[in-house]
Amino acid sequence: MATLIKIISDGSMVEFDKGSFDEWCVYLTRKNQPRYAPKDLEYFTELKRLGKKYGNHRIYDDFVTIYKPTNSIINKEILAQITNIASTYEEDQILMDIWFTVIYAGMVAEENKQYAVLKKRVKRLGMHQLLVNNATPGFAANFSKGKKWRDLDLVMKKYGF
Image 1: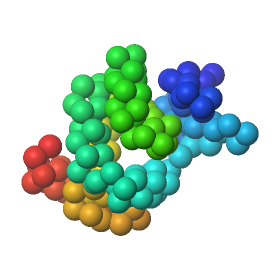
Image 2 (image 1 turned 135 degrees about the horizontal axis):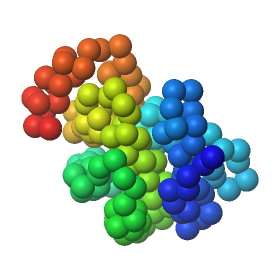
Image 3 (image 1 turned 180 degrees about the vertical axis):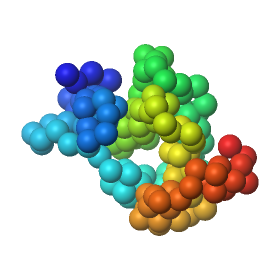
Image 4 (image 1 turned 45 degrees about the vertical axis):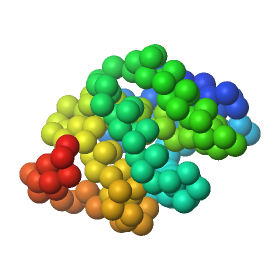
């Protein structure tokens, strides 16, 4: 059974539901579109495009504001903070609200995964590579796949998280 995380002002919904591995799959339903589980590549591509418009560091800094207090429980205050942050992105505020909410939900999911060692830090690594190191969305989305957690931990520590 789906757990609603947030309804965005345009009617889009972000929720958790059963996925291939566990109950922590993040789903997005947009107006007049079927529900689906967004992939890192999709939102990294959008955030890269938005970074050209608003600045990569601005988006990354806003992401870190959300990242820091994230834990294993959905927090209504963080969801409201996401909407507040998104409202500063002018005509792209709905997109920012959607993608920051999806990423936030993904971090909460990582914090709840039983055998995950790196937890939410995996999302931060992707965002750091994308927006600070200026990597392509494909590189940032796929960098962690197949790598040992200890190797990724060393990379993360090098970046200070």
